[in-house]
Image 1 (cartoon, one colour):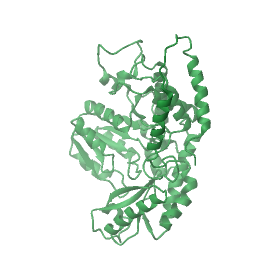
Image 2 (tube, helix red, strand yellow):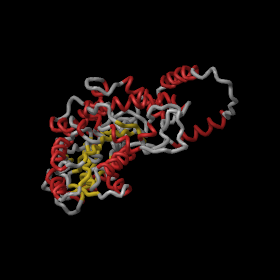
Image 3 (spheres, helix red, strand yellow):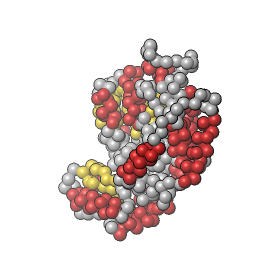
Length: 444
């Protein structure tokens, strides 16, 4: 499989010619370009980059790493010849307009009507902004599940907000009884609902949390950095779909286009259902430059300089593959779901492995059969290393032994956690590779 399709370079060259036409009226400027030195440095860069895993290939089935779509890659590169800054309209007029269009499209995908939002460097910064707003609008403790991303605890510390962890059920979802117990103690300002946990791809029960909000009055923040795009998938389990369909009722939502949105890093997005949240960002800095009375993106973002190229790449991708139900984009998400279910079934038929709950999204977690947790963990680490030697790259995850024993009570719990293997089958090509992946694992 070739990493580089030379047709992409031809497309980029033609697009650059068109871009150049918009600026030909300007006086020439001298360019001191040492092409030989630049070429030599780039050759060294290319050789250094060999020390990477093949993230673009379906035999990379480990972490949440999905290659950007060619149109995103090319649009990003094209924009870099101008290097717009989407902090203010002066710095990125066209790219700022593109960003606003993209935010509206993502909002529509999530069921939001005219949300306030913007792109940012990724899920961490997006969650920081959401929790910052939540802390000012709804002071109190922040609750998130034990399987939520660790940054929620860290970001709460940064923001000087009290944080508490809520237990999960055996499938890794926020446990409603544990949440109700925490709410009964009072003082809760925000509940973070994760739609697609990093470890298991589990979907917290958003619909049920929203029902509790009616009684307890807390703010609901949805971390859908990984799972938000699956709202478009046509083949979700009914229980999963029920919760994803309620994203429009959350107070704030985070989603990462640089995960399932086919974008280069970094491209996250934060959305607020109530545009009035924009008042929290108000500032009066004498050094901010303005060329328009129109609200610009720097006025609704904690970040200042932000790459306009990220907005250009996302806009181009939306033009080619609109994030709407029934389209090619949604069909490719369905292929990832099908790949995960197929691998889960194949491993479940083998006596050499044990599986956890059927995947809700495209993440499969499994272990190597053994009499006890310590041996299973040792075998998982060995298989992880041996698979990599065969160019099959997986990930490892530590899970509470109780979570595994709930499905496999015969496992002796001689350590607190069990090391398991984890695969994120994010690429639609993974569906065609499942048989090969399962066969390689069985052979090892």
